[in-house]
Image (cartoon, rainbow, N blue to C red):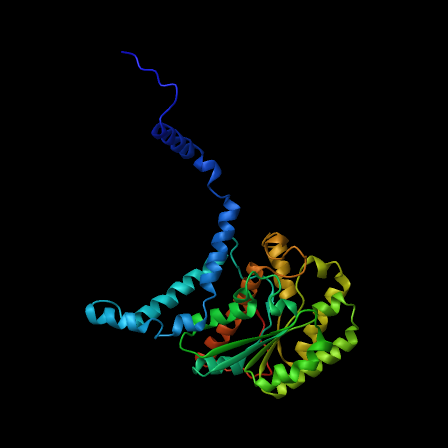
Length: 338
């Protein structure tokens, strides 16, 4: 007997639809490689920017852990779990550099100096206060979240390196400012806090606003002298190498030289951000768009992270020198390849 089926059953339709979805899945569901990389990068940043309390708080979830320990003596204790958490954060923090590694620039002099005050306190396990003072690139404009600013990235790195230390990094960046505005809040937002180290990023807006370089030099020198008188280590940070700055090449070069001259005269450190970022582009062949956002001025998450990493490496090296007995006087700066 012959059976005719002018209409497919509901079950048959479901099976055919499922087969079509399976065939189309690789084309319609899978995200692009760029989208996947960006998602991975942001996930890694979220893990890597964990605060000190995440890594060091032994009582986070204490009741559940204690109950589990009582029921199973073989289960790792609170201290072991905290150590595992620190290791996990350290691994996650490095993931942001998987796509574009953060290499030490070659041929760029490291002039941040010995940083004896903050290094000695870290080596001795004493509480440390670091203040990041500056404008929008200190405040973190261009980062995708507050924890991805360079001060917070620096804090995370130092806390991973010294998990038992009480490290505070205060962000005192305010967008649009330069030396004239910064000097008005230097006392209350920096000196009155009696920090162990000040990282002063200055000069970019002076270039963009065509401020008088002679007046800028006077204001920065005055600020440096006041910070030194309070006993803090000091590192100046010069302008960023980005299209909005480099389109004024003469002013940019002049500001870099001006800050370098002040650092030499006052015997303080300087982080050569302009040359470091130039090295990223010209020697490491990293496209500008990989470390500068669309406004042509501010860094992105990777740019801030690499900047913080290199600055943190300088601080860690200074601590290492103190530990092996190389105690360089505060008025002597060291020059070594980064």
